[in-house]
Length: 430
Ligand SMILES: [Zn+2]
Image 1 (cartoon, rainbow, N blue to C red):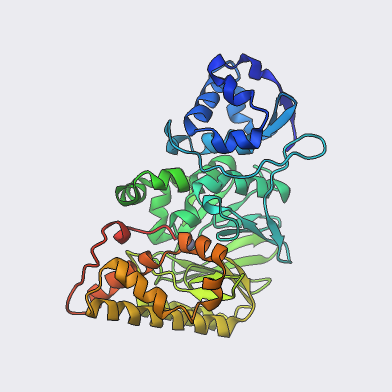
Image 2: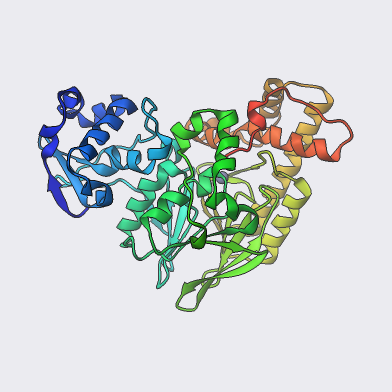
């Protein structure tokens, strides 16, 4: 973090002293309610320091000789301003790190994948290692996947670490507009004024007007969407570019990102292949890869999942002969044929299990229990790793996969079946 240091917390109203005077900042952050912290910001901004709003990236704050980085304390509220009404819990659960100069050091995880390609851990919902964004640095720096709205401060800090200034970023492209891939789009186009936002033509309209997408998510998931993911904010239409079924995105220096229509997980999904490295950004179209346990699971949420189309997309990926698969969840994989074969097999196994659950008329809870039991050997390593299991189940729940597959089976089989769980039948965010 570069920039000025200010010390006017004394001006804050007494009602904030309990929070601001608490020297156990990390503890205070974890205990402080969103209400207190929102109010702190309101008063700070209303207290004659209006330029803060436009320059938040250039300040650190000194409180009782302890620096508290705005990224941890304030930026989540500014970024999530439309999505964090008073009383809502902050999604910010990151650790506070202070460097030797008592400046905040943001603990972002950026991994160099070679050839100016970097993986960014967007720390979705406070979990490390489940959702990645990627940055291709060059004369036209390009971000692939934004992460959720709540992750925007992390992504901004990661790009800062990679020396990408707000003016530098040329392109933001998303594989699809689910909130874990595109939720931060509005925040990031606002922070990076020169960046063009790119998505497939079937999804791009939701980036311009996210009302329908957010309303349908809220209708079913309620405030959880705002609290955990944050709201997708609109981007002006003139900054959004729609992709056809194939397209080329110029990365500068003769390097190109070729886009291929890749539906099945979502009807507006694309895969993106880097002309220099042969890396293929697969989004969720080949499922979810869990690096700790070398496990592939399907990603089959409603409402779009379609087995036949998803299998065709995996064939398309294979035909592109990529050198690596870069999963949004999570990271690079070099064993192309083996992994894509597993992606196909996962889809077929789960579809058969859901078909069986329908035929035996299980409710959703029993269907989940049945699938867990019947896949316990397949996922033995994952089930043995409690931490990985918790993180990836939060991201890619068994219930959502079942409901997504069921919806597709309703279309292709004679008798529709209701698992009796309306909540899980909503558009999912994975
Ligand atoms: Zn996803």
